Length: 324
Image (cartoon, rainbow, N blue to C red; front, side, top):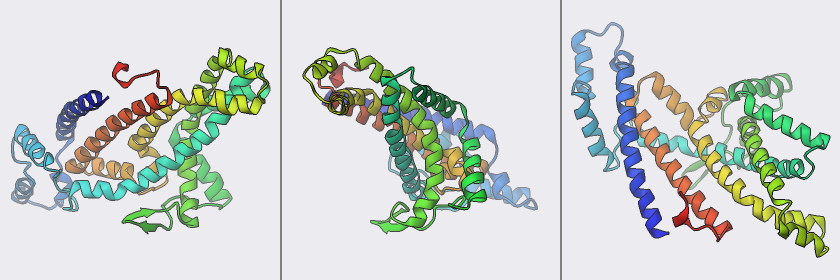
């Protein structure tokens, strides 16, 4: 297992190098950040001075080498707009995104696993068909549309919760958390439910498939033959085995929520990393965009490794060294 972890870390370095080069070149081709920073009345000399102060007058390859030489020391450059370190800006927004993603995935699992088991036990029942229809809607409806609809219903028409923002937060060890306040939960409810609506559809379908696959197995038949109650058969023997694919998918989906909650955060004005990324792309704030994507790539690779390790814990028959 140790050799596999070391190999994954080496692969992570290669992936991050390739990603940084692609992003750096891509943003360079989009436009000139000086046009965003300089006033419309600025002279060409003033624009050239801004470009030189940011190092944008250097050749692209040299800009990239300077960036990477600083990145290996943990310095990803300063934001073109604020002048603050890019990674600090991202880390300040990270707790909000982690909080949103965690609550959304917990809701997805709490909703998706019971409904998936119900749909797998009696696939032809009307309730099961209704569950699967709901999962299809979860796949099909775009997040921004679902977000706008829940804002219109629960925030505008009913007035139960705010339409955006994060609400009150509590400082815990330097981290601002909204889950510890009632106002924070009100602000968190709609964006978390919007993300959970889509992710629970994935959990439902995976759980249903795993349930249908496990029901004919001998260990389920033997447990029923021993006279165990249906609740014990489902809650112990069945649930333990279907958790393997569920945990794998839930872990990967958590990474996707972390990386791609951009639209939801923008719709609900949630002050997370996704909204910061959108603002940085609009203003061509290159250091922030590159630092964000490198952090997300590292997070996703590490998350995949953790999921693999959890997989081997749940099913000792699978060894980490043998998995692709």
